[in-house]
Length: 432
Ligand code: ATP
Ligand code: MN
Image (cartoon, rainbow, N blue to C red; front, side, top):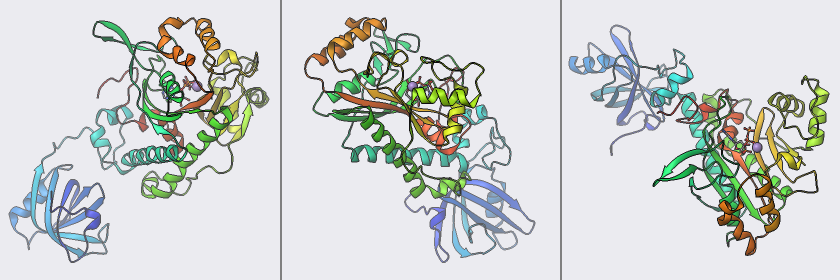
């Protein structure tokens, strides 16, 4: 619509055509108000029944909520109107009528279950506080890309249909690829590593990962967005520096550019970008501190993975983003470089409430790598496309993967990761 004016741009004295959704109609007898909503906000449309054409009044006041209409009229100052201006309509055009029965109330007066919301995302995102999550998500991805560029990285896109997975079979979704078995990729791990040995050296990717995890938790999806980084001639400490820079850049951009969205989420006052360096605890310190909280029935011993309650207890204790370094080799993937017989270069970056990132320096020595595949029970032959490139000059390198939805979820204090995805995929949900 060439001649359309956004409601936020309608100034007193203008004659405008505004178009959007019928948010509400309030009939006060002699006078009635229609609140029209578009992506920039809302505007009041005034109907004075005695002074206006009957057809016009009828059209304006009988239209169902959430119908799409356009209104042409003069804008005047009106201090009592929600935005300080109102439109006196010369014409009202009903463009797309909505059913009187809505599956979800976009005015937010009636709360809806998450599943109803996810079934009706179009209506759900007409609510300011839901739309705000996705405005912030978009800003986070923009800021992350910019930060990666500042770090000298090139954005890459690697295949999501693959012949083999990194972590073995159970978490892979099989598909049929021209009569042959294939899988949805669970991580760009191997491909991004292949690119640090190419002329690109430093790469990042933002893309989907697919995990056939059976469990149903508020922080797992079966299709998630992974923010991946990999850098040649880097060790795990440099990878941690990059991780910290990217996460901080995301927070800072949201703080600087998303005040309206934060306001809609009621977070404007409390939102703070993390300051200072993220503490770096060794795994050994981490289990000692968890044990000292007394929150676990059984104390943790070397080699245990951190249980969810342990992560929570430690998170409360630390109270900010932090790293856990020096993980036992035995519980980190085989492609992570070991420091010695027991300790690896693997690290996790944690929000006080959950894991956000796993990373480490990678094993770039061909013989060690092939041995690792064997120890993992994987056939090195099946990964020949990957391992053979380690024979032709593979620099030492390090990197990490950050869960995009977990970053949004923890940043905004969302109770469920599904709220950070438009159309989440989980155990029960394949559509829409
Ligand atoms: P967790 O132990 O929390 O299930 P993970 O250690 O299996 O995670 P990684 O393989 O280390 O996950 O993946 C790197 C990051 O990707 C994680 O730290 C997390 O932020 C994100 N991630 C992994 N799996 C999922 C998932 N199923 N849903 C959402 N995000 C995920
Ligand atoms: Mn992990």
